[in-house]
Length: 132
Image 1 (cartoon, rainbow, N blue to C red):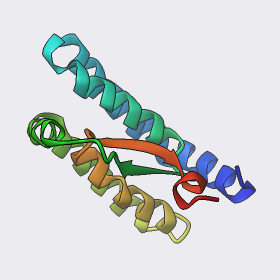
Image 2 (image 1 turned 90 degrees about the horizontal axis):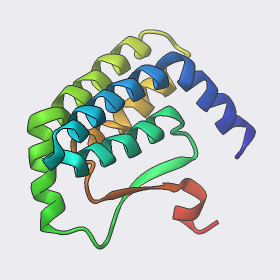
Image 3 (image 1 turned 45 degrees about the horizontal axis):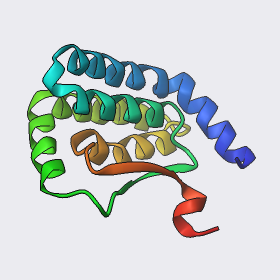
């Protein structure tokens, strides 16, 4: 991990990461309690891990995902996705007020698509994605 990524991740964890990850963990626990929604709970825990330490990693679409992921994402948006996306939006607005918070606000906005469509995606290192 590059030193700048480490610094950004530590600042992110203190300012935003812990609280946003907590939201995903709560959503994941609720999904795991309702037995039928365990796949969404697992996806929520995966995103919570990503939200804790996002710099240096990216969420990319799985080439093998299909119609099941699309239908699951529609259900996810209705149940929990829009709440989590709203949390990212509100947090990014609060962060954008300060100059030092602008990069974190932008990073928060980039997390909205995965909060709405978690199924059919995987988290990879940025270096691996670009083939470095």
